[in-house]
Image 1 (cartoon, rainbow, N blue to C red):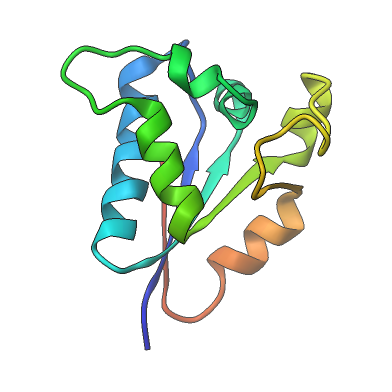
Image 2: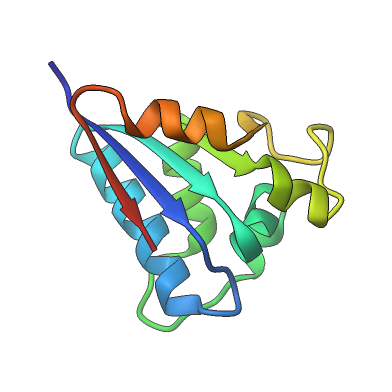
Length: 120
């Protein structure tokens, strides 16, 4: 059985290194063949919008847009319901393939058998 990795990004441009680590780990896990679910919470929620990840820049880090594309291509990306609401982000605003879901969905994912969760 393939293991699942759930990565929760709690930071965006406000803490760029922590943000980049979450996206890098998620994309690396996808490349390694893991089932990956990336949760965007807090300020990282903005990266679910078209063009926002391309605006992020951190020296010596892979482009955030490329990392996000890798996860979207082979994994799942979710924006926290409350985080989206506080930023007035709706399902019509986000990139194709991104969903908006709440704590119940996060808990369900993380408590499933064979799941490892990481929070950045």
